Length: 335
Ligand SMILES: [Zn+2]
Image (tube, rainbow, N blue to C red; front, side, top):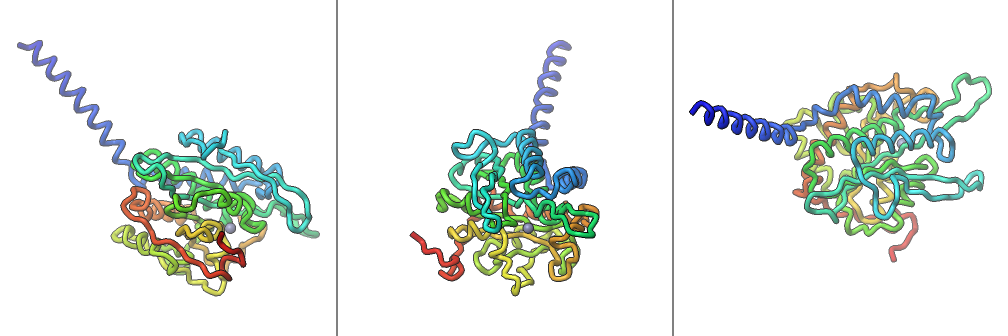
């Protein structure tokens, strides 16, 4: 009798242990996106060692290698028929007429059930590189806010969604190159895609400083162009974090970041930002260093993007498509 009891106890405890493990897997919360991880990504990508991540320079090679190592550690797979995480291509620099070797860095988290429905989570990992100016001591444009902060978000969200393991749709995590040279990387990425498979674009730019709407707020470019922003707002209800429409209409920001390359294909693709760009003294300056940023602001914003986009990732919500005028298409006609 005693033996049977011990055996039963053993079975019950094994069962309890297993179900507890299961619970832990589903219990991954946004709290797992922490300041330690954020600080590590940010300070690595914006370090002087990366030499301002100018496209075509040794510095951006180092940044790409860091992103690749992280994708591998997290357990992301490769995109389409690529052999690694890099999408290699060359382009001609408009200014110098020189041929430049460039690469987007793409990692994939395959959807559980809607494998052919893609959500893009992106940021540009390039910046302005090194520019020597007479009389200036510092010549490295670290691009900490622009856009090491967004790239940090891409890496943190990749790890979060991988651990969470409930993405019904396929998520493509893309670090775009040569954004600063005219959205070159994202334009290349958009060239051969079947846009009808792309459900949404979540682009992240400059989230290192508190937005002008106050703490725990961000704004979204092209808010009125689809119902993407409304979906995010609904999901953020009760979270203490608020999303606003882009307050800088005069800057035409919807067309000035990589989201535009996908929006031109009709994909509801928007940029999240907290940048107070009207008063930002470090914008496109050598002084855009990680020490000028608020790591908590970045962490809270990444968590808010995770909560806000959850229903799109899970396949519950599908944002409406974006329609641009011919002028907004940049004179390009649809085939
Ligand atoms: Zn930028």
